[in-house]
Structures are given as C-alpha cells and as structure tokens.
Image (tube, rainbow, N blue to C red; front, side, top):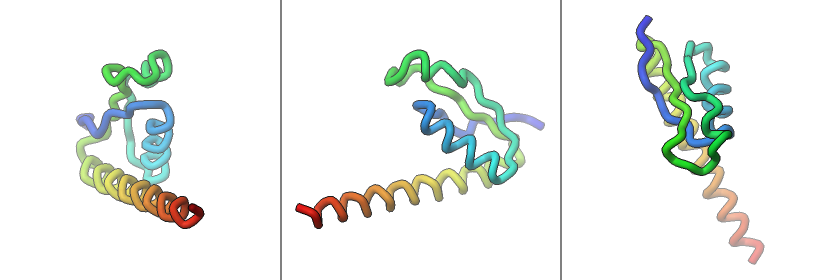
Length: 86
C-alpha cells in the first residue's frame, strides 16, 4: 500500500493523541522524524510527519476532525467554568 501524508504533529503530546487515535481504530501508520520535536521543543520547523495507508486516509481525516472538535468543545467548557468562578 502507498503511504500518504495525514498530519504534522507539533509536539510529543499531540503525537501521542494522534497515535492513540490511529491505534484505537486499527489504522496502519508510519511516523517520520518521530523524536525530532522532543529534541527541539517549540521550534515549528521540526515536526513529526504522520503517514497513513492511502486506503485509510479518509477515515483518519474524519477521526482527526472529530478529535479537534472535541478538544475545542472541552476548551470552551473550561473557559465557561473559569468565568463562572470570577
């Protein structure tokens, strides 16, 4: 199978979430430059590239978009809770 680019992970935390999402859904993947972001944290030029099999790209993109939506909703909820304490 041909591997195609899915996403660039900016740090080890983001990479761990992506890896967990793909593992949990049994989507084959390869990570290029996996440890470079831990060597140079905060440098946007050093990212880990996540590649998936072409046949799984659409599913992986859908799962990532759902993850992003969940993160945004959780952040909004935390902001609302923070403002109610003030």
